[in-house]
Length: 121
Image 1: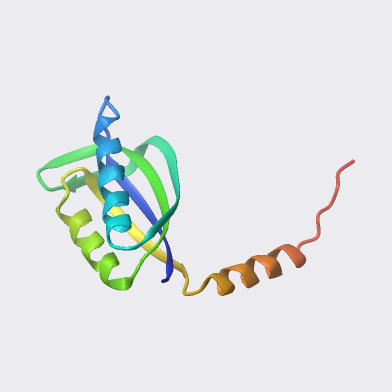
Image 2 (image 1 turned 90 degrees about the horizontal axis):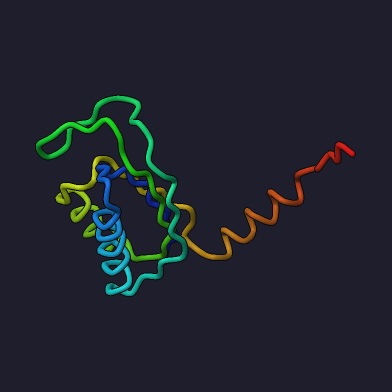
């Protein structure tokens, strides 16, 4: 199963139950279809770079969050359909980080071995 990262901007509400419901729905969809959720990151609430229109209203602020997961391409298609129809979602994008665990491990190893750390002390 390929390894993906989804970055999402959702509509901001004063109560976090809306975003919790969206993240829970997304994770449950992935896990119910045989995928694995590896990491959930909340980046916080920020002003949007521009006013965004989605479904019926305009938004000036949004909640940013990221999700790392493994799933099949078919599940990814259905996840995109869910995100497209959800009125809480302003924007989202899915990045494919790798097709195999071995690919990710070897890239990480090369990145660490190639760096030189200068100690300022």
